[in-house]
Each structure stands twice: as C-alpha cells, then as structure tokens.
Length: 179
Image (cartoon, rainbow, N blue to C red; front, side):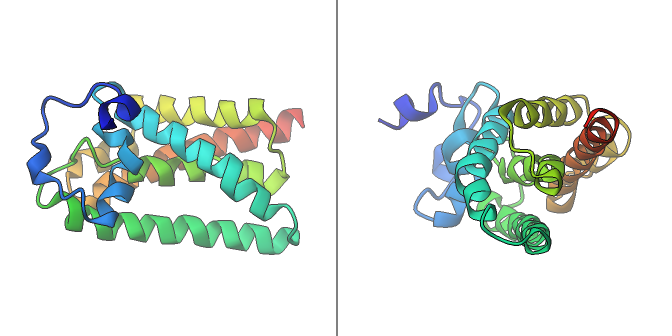
C-alpha cells in the first residue's frame, strides 16, 4: 500500500534505519514524500504548497492584515526550529539525508511570503513561487551552495531558507513592477 502512495521507493535507503513509528519521522520525511526515488525535494515542495493553499490560506483570510503577517512569520520560524530539532532525532548522524524534506517545506513557505503580504493567492502566483524556489534550490547559487556544503542540520535547513528568500525577493520585485 505504501508503494502506491509514494511511487517507487528509494533503493539507497535502509528502511530499518528509519523509525517509522516515531511521528516526528513523518514530518521529517515530508509525510512520505522524502521516500520517493523520483525528485523527493520537489515532491516535498509541492506538498508544502498544497498545505499552504488548503490549510494556511483559508485560516489567514478572516484575520486582520498585521496579525496575518505576524502569524505567518511565527509559523515559518517555528517550522525552521522544528526542522533543526527533528533532523538529529530522526536522521541520526547522516549528513544531508536525502529523505529529510522538511527543509523544503520551510523554504517553500518562505518563497510564498510575498503572496501573504500582497494577499495574492492566485494559482499563477503560487505556481511562480514554486518554480522560483525549485530553480534556486536545485542550482544552489552563492550562499545557498555554501550552506548546502556544511552537511549539518543548520546547513540543511539554511540552504532552503536562502533559496526561499531569493524566490521571495524576485517575487516581490515582480509584484512591485507589475502590480
């Protein structure tokens, strides 16, 4: 059954090393997307985008603008520190475990931040933020590459944070020019 949900499972992973009974593991592996042998980071980012659209956006709508921004910043900060915490607890001493995709969630949510500021939840804006985030996360220019090479939980999380910040910056510039 699990194979049907995830698709093809990773061959390079010893599943006995991963404690699937630990609920934190399911967050760490992006609710199973990290187990995919086919683009686990992209699948994790896509799931983060879906969660944003269906769980976070409806919650934000009824509240005052300043509360929404503060709440969203707190959500991202808590998610970042949660990711730092669960990496060691679920991945052990592995350097940049490919199944760990919670960092993709945090980076994607940072990339979506301009949409929260401008209250623009159009699908094309969400799709553009996804494309920009994946572009920077895959190519890893400048400081993204530096943090990626650290190989520790902080580096694992920070490379996606910076990819999200780059994406959010480009989106902000586009919104300022065209909106």
